[in-house]
Image 1 (cartoon, rainbow, N blue to C red):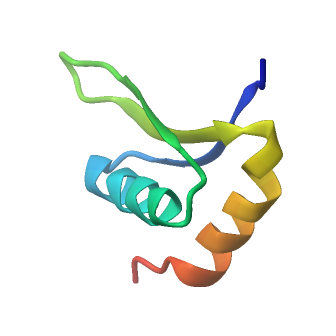
Image 2: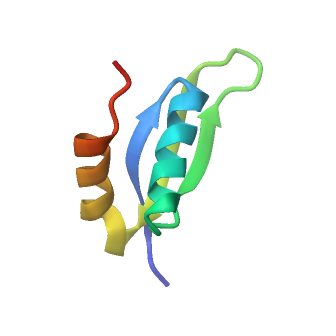
Length: 68
């Protein structure tokens, strides 16, 4: 079984969802992990991929996704 590794995290859920959508479109099968406290809204949303896709996912996030 492949291990999942974090490739992106953000306090804004919409940004994490955009990253998930882009990676899904490219066939990387990402998973969104909500690590935010429900009561206080503190914490992060993390995007994880299997170990096989980590380097590819990081390159895509760095080169193709810009939130500014």
